[in-house]
Image (cartoon, rainbow, N blue to C red; front, side):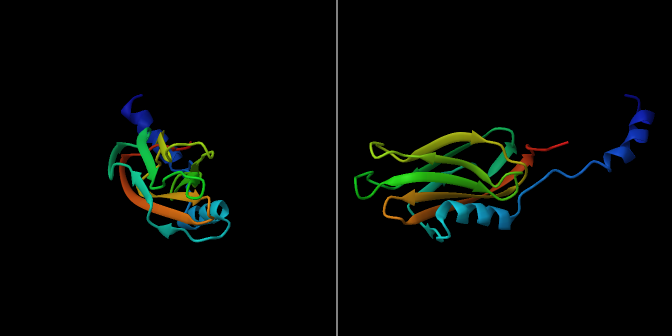
Length: 144
């Protein structure tokens, strides 16, 4: 593309709709839907993610919950939420009564710098959480 064509096309790029992004309120609403309205307490959940991410297309994430995974004290599910991706609910992983450890390890996409929230649902009906701030230098999840 020649510089002249690029200059002629530039105003049209301004007409493209902005990428859809969830808000803090949408993230909190998704979290409340997961917890049934119960506010999770901080603790027992440990989220591991780099605080500075160069490329948001594939970001390693792991969540570990401190639980003996016994009959009475075990994790039923772990859910991860994000603040500024198009969809605020990233993933939910469920654990059966025979699970030996409550660990979630995956890669996610991040649209931009944002807050992530991991919530664990326990068998006794309690909810525990951890959050992390992530700075993304090259965004992912861009629609257009």
